Image (tube, rainbow, N blue to C red):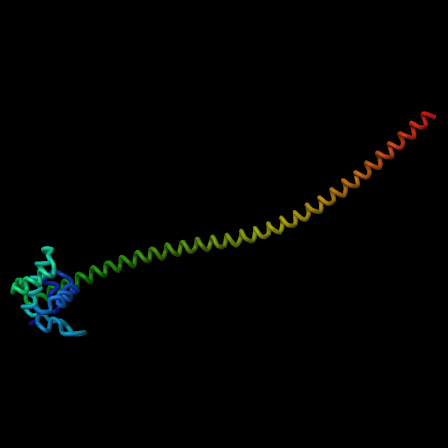
Length: 194
């Protein structure tokens, strides 16, 4: 019974994506079912798993793919795990359930966090609307204040003009009175001389 990608990943404790990469990188050492073509399921034989086992050992030691190729060309292979694909399926099923449970927990946490952020955003939006309303109110007050200022400035201009008119009139009256007084003084002095 051949191994699926998920089985190989579980046996070697790597991701399914790693198995896909290895299947392409080390295709010359693998069976034809390991790289069946686009949109077809990969299936791995015991020999394929031994190739992956050696690659896994080499990469865990921090060595390169070139060194893995060299070892494989020399005929080296890794150990075949003692589990059959059917046994691995049970492990994969449990691992998949655990992964799904963890993913569910992560998503629920994200949902709670996003709901909290949404509530905070709603509160911020309410504050923004309050500020906008206050701005509208202050804008109306400012506009009314501007009209009042213009009215008062016009009133001040009228009063200033009136003050100037009164001052002119007062100045004329004073001058007139001063002249009359001076004239009377001169007449009196002239009368006293005579």
